[in-house]
Image (tube, rainbow, N blue to C red; front, side, top):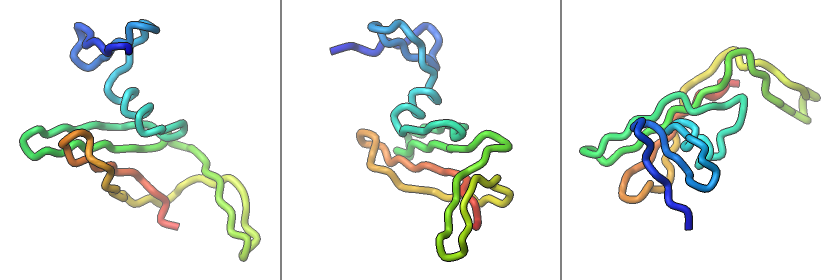
Length: 106
């Protein structure tokens, strides 16, 4: 079983097998399966309150597939109007995990 090692840089983790470095945002994105155009914008961990927060955003100018069969609409569209939504995840060990993501209002 591979062990993850903390690098001399506190925000990076090294996997000995591949010798690649992942920062906290990249590691979180892989764990949550966040793919482009989405990305992990920010992570906050508060050990005193027992909360781990992850903010997910998308690259500016991205388009997203949308289909409404009743209205005959289909295609890739830009998100012009968004709202922030929060989801509660399973705990990360003993810590309460919440994710925040921009979502289209439409």
